[in-house]
Length: 230
Image (cartoon, rainbow, N blue to C red; front, side, top):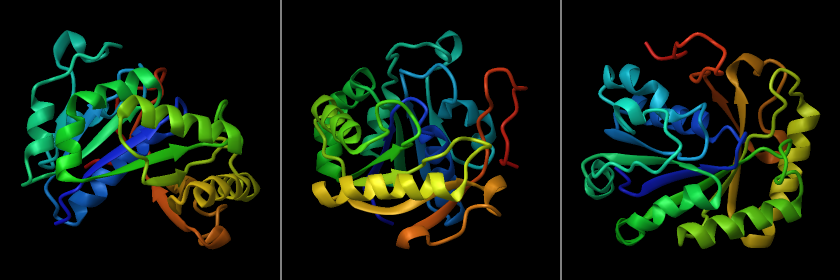
């Protein structure tokens, strides 16, 4: 088992928590012991902690604020996080809020993360403010690296307009992100598509790999039910 820590970061509206949950679920399907750590202190909705009870039934550990702090917008950080970072018997996946306040939570663990080894994936939706063009994405990455004291290793395209997503939108996103990846010499190989839209978005757009995501997280006005986990 690759023992690197996987850190998944994205700006508000990027879809990084949905990606983090799907990523963990795929590791579980490969029979890799995995722990999902919710370090998102930015976004009050769409957090990975929403799947805690469902994942527990699948022997996936989710570390997140408990009780009255479940929906808090403050860094109520459990001492179990350091345990997850250091436990080489399980693969930790960290879901981190994508602004300086969110990334600063990583600074508490930075030396242990570096000692163990890590991948830092940034999920980008070019249909969101501040990440719609080359300059905005570069600025975001610089801010994330400065705040977290870690280096970005990979970009992931999640360009979408929800139910209005089409091939042209994703192709445009891939082109923009490819330009950033080439300039910064970063890995960029995947674009994300919700499974329900698979019929309208082809595989291998511009030479990149299509990754289908299940829908796990509810919008705040929807019923409290996690989709996709049995």
